[in-house]
Length: 143
Image (cartoon, rainbow, N blue to C red; front, side, top):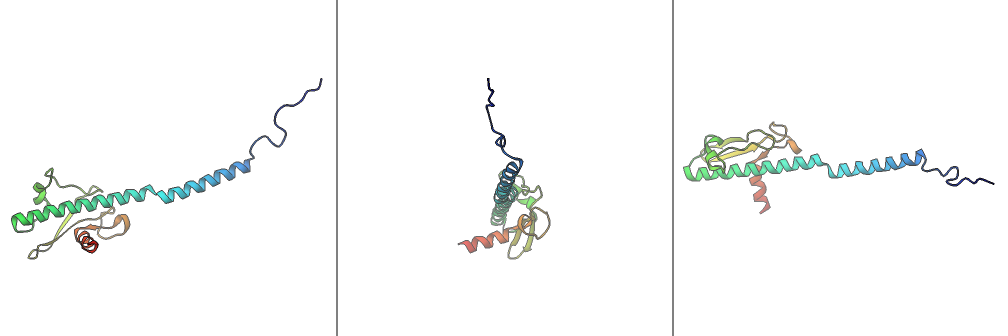
């Protein structure tokens, strides 16, 4: 009786190492493109910038209300805490206090700002400062 080998012929046992490596490289390239395109860290930075803009805007409204009620600028942000919902000054998204500067007492010009991710004056991208003056300028340019 003759025995036959049932199954796969020699040379057709499966994928070669080279074929598997090519597939892994192609998948790595696709994942790399997706990571660059989606970049979750950039989205987190953008969300914090937007949150800081909202915080600056809220504090600006509270200062404006204080000016309307008291006919003067507050000496510090702590003086307007009672105008806020929870009677507390919020921190910026990076956990630091918002800054308040009186620019001109007579014309009642002031600035509220967050120093961005780096916590220092100036910067670009995530480190860019968020200022009530810049937000006001953008708002007037948009209308």
